[in-house]
Image (cartoon, rainbow, N blue to C red):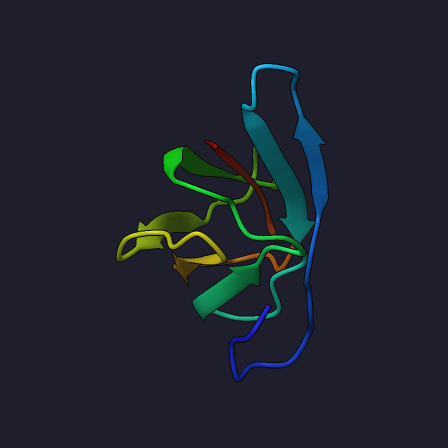
Length: 96
């Protein structure tokens, strides 16, 4: 993760299916509000068809997260706001 706020993350897990569909996923331990760039260990070859993030918080906590801009074949950016507990988020990208 490149965020200027500390912490780090590059890669994640990746699964390629026989039909060429690729699923990439991972977790970012967020340390503060701001933008976090997830760099894939290997870029998608052609396109990202779906991207998402879900927070990693308990029922008593809250965090707002969204994808910033358009994901590229090699990375995507997530923005965090209103974080009241620094637990992070899970992300997933699907493509070819």
